[in-house]
Amino acid sequence: MALFPISSKFEGDFVLKLVPVDTENTMAEVAAAAAEHSVGVHVPDQPGRPIRARAEGSTEAYPLDMKLSETGLGPTDTVEFYFE
Amino acid sequence: MALLERSAWYDLARSTEWTPSYISQDELFPPEMSGGEGIPAEVWSTYDEPYKVTYREYVDVQRQKDEGAYSVKAALERADLYNKADPGWISILKEHYAAVALVEYGASFQEARYVRWSKAPGMRNMATFGMLDEMRHGQIQLYFPHEYIGKDRQFDWSHQMMWSNNWVALGARHFFDDMLMTRGAAETSISANFAFETGFTNLQFIGLSGDAANAGDFTFSKLIQSIQSDEARHAQLGTPLLQMMIENGQKAKAQNLIDIAFWRSYRLFTILSGIPMDYYVPLEVRESSFKEFMEEWIVTQFMKSIEDLGLSKPWYWDIFLRDLDEHHHGQHLGTYSWRPTLWWNPAAGVSPEERDWLEEKYPGWNDTFGKVWDVMIDNFVSGRPEKTVPGTLPMICNVSQLPIVGTPGVSLKDTSIVFEGRKYHFASEVDKWIFEQDPERYKHHKNLIDRFLGGEIQPANLDGVLEYMGLGVISPGGDDAHGYAWLEAYKTALAPAG
View 1 (cartoon, each protein chain N blue to C red):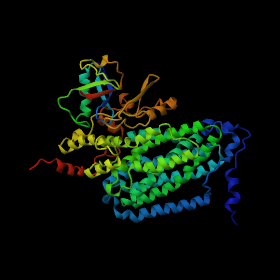
View 2: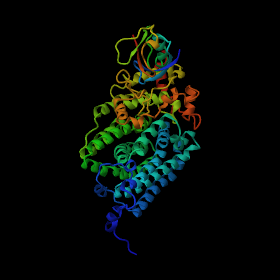
View 3: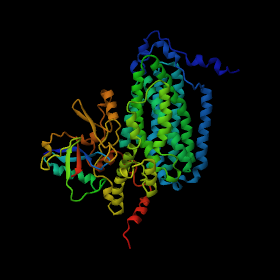
View 4: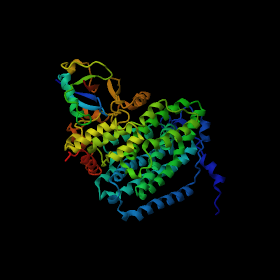
């Protein structure tokens, strides 16, 4: 377990945000942490639609149960979050 | 004793030169201080500039300028501008004085470096006056806001900001250290006098002067006109050097210096000029949008001066033109969202009427930046003010030191590289390109996020960040300039029927 900062690029937001997460978090948990700082703050909520994460520029989402430590992401790398 | 006519002695006096006999030329003018390597020795004495002024004339004119500005201030002190002006205008004064006054004083050191290290005797002569100009600008822009400190502690930032670790101060110091303080005299003059002053101080000092008069602040209008009349003179210091570089086979170097300084200046002025012009200046007195000012002063006039010299538009010209529609809107959303980190109270500038104006000036604004404001407005109106200030920090560019912003759904993007094992983030391809021009120059600097993640800011939470930046220490942080009165129209619109 280790604190791990990522840069969140949330679909519809205007700014990249620093989001502290943990290497043991699943990508579903990472997405929830990113959503806390964007959804209902700068991005309208879309109830019922799950939030997915992918590497910036990628078209493929990380599996929701994948651990952050398994993604190959480095500290402060930018992750795209979007409503599925 | 009769005085000689100026023409009888001026050219001789300003071209008087040292002839070193017991030290070498490089010891007298060390390359790292003087710059201009590769320009033949005999060329320096040909440096010529259009403003031929003597000390006697200079002092007389400057006295008249001071007299004009100070007498308007004295005459209007009882007008109680602070309580009568729109709060958005007061915020502009707070932002301007803090961002500008000590930088002007710093610029006197920039000019002083020319006085000692420039290899062109004519430049050393003119820079002496430039140095005195900048001292005047530092002093007058500290004196004028001083009367407001008793009314509002946020005006104390006029003197404190550049000594603080406020995020704007980190950006301003990074920029001005790069442009004014850490290059050879010749190169500095191209970055600072030609690109920064000729291009961009017009924007702040002439652009805002009209808005100030319209807003009834004749003191500020007169003050910045007085300053700009000096800037227009000493900004000319760089042009002869550009010509010398170009004529001596260094066109690419000159172009590179301008391309770096132009982008850095532009991005800084999106905060200093862009946000106030499009959001803080009361709608009824706005002369033009930031983009329109940029098109007039930069796209047309400054570019003409570049092309007249045989240089080209910066390579990123298309990126720049697109950016005029985008960047400062993102920075305004950022500064307003993180308003506790400011030393001024930002005006939201997004009432229904103001949004109509924004949409007219920037077609598509409502469908992009406006959507973010819709969420914030809903939070305000629905009684969730805590959701209107983010609970984390924005990612920060390692060159501009500004938050990495973009148009929602269109252009928000991270641009990053790994250099010597460290990851650097940039707010644009151009910022990355600037870093790559001279990584040794930029690689050591730590932006706010680097400091936060590195444990330099304690406690490592938003309270710790605010204290680190001087908020709650020098003065309280920012809050809505108008006490959220602009939300009334939205409350009415969203009120339940019946």
